[in-house]
Image (tube, each protein chain N blue to C red):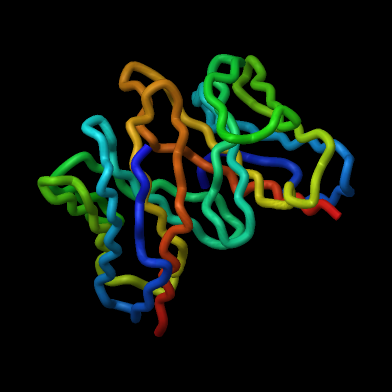
Length: 111
Length: 116
């Protein structure tokens, strides 16, 4: 499974757009890119998933360049409740769904 | 709310004891997996169950075992507890169907185990 690298922490203010970039240089052809969010003492929550180009849902956007060696999670107009750890995962999930989590990015949103 | 419930939410054990953690998956989900999350770390995959059989396992010793029942609920059993087993244990459910596996898991809030 491809290894991912993402910033350890980020700070932002309410109302700003936050972009978290994840590097995955060894991504394989069948791999998807998935982002999860985790609040303290809770399980991770699926945010968004993509294979290439751009994916958008009601929560976030995911930008994936043509070489797929990186991806950027974009959170528009963050609020205090977006303070959490964000994980970038890469995998093809064939056979069984082994999600490989790194240490994630701790996002702190301040007033 | 993911519809995945875990029990107990917190428990304390001593070294050498055994523990059983329980998980009820989201309605209709036929696949359950378990993860261990140490403080400050990301979750680590323990194993996955599909149709009552283990069909994938991470790098955990055999004293970590599990079961899945016909109603798709699951148990995680850990024997001979060690201090390093102190962690948040997360259960996640998903539906393996015609679309195959998608990487979208629905996690419970976890069981926090402390081993003294």
